[in-house]
Image (cartoon, rainbow, N blue to C red; front, side, top):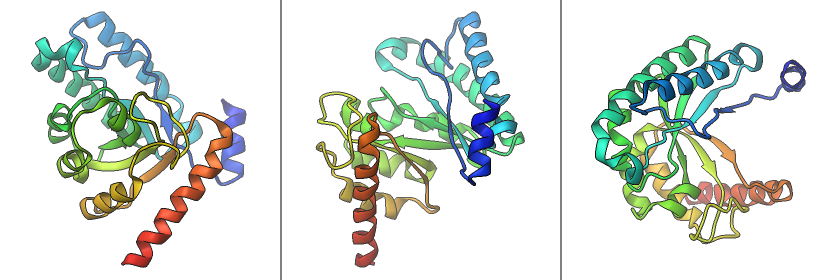
Length: 219
């Protein structure tokens, strides 16, 4: 860890963190699972001083088919987790971002953001996850959660799965997405390109820059 952090800092590179998520449940009603989830997040916080990341991204973690029958309990435990973690991350000089994954509707996340300190906790909108897992239109997501967006995870897919392919190779309408975003977001969000193949990173960056230039010309 120390060598990787040193390499980044020496090159003037700012980083963001993605926290662990496999088998974790930030809103679990099981106290042992909840405590283990918190411990994993504590381990992330311990690395902030070393890497000095701008943000820490965590999966919000709500799945209606798993937690819908105890939604109130899940949100109560989840808000407790994110309040604690948001404060800890803020104390270390970074900001916590909660990311959508399997949530079908922004209504499943809105209560979280309305209950948390916006200066400490923001929304990381993953458009690939919205495309793959949500039946709710993009316009509804942006209208509901746009004011909370502080970071974007960008990748493409066919709409049939979470494929994480290069921007422009799938069916996502990124031009419309950025047009909607520009009207809803006050401060420019951080952007993370998330194609899973290294050779697709540069094409994704080029695609992103083309859209950005096109939108700037339209102003």
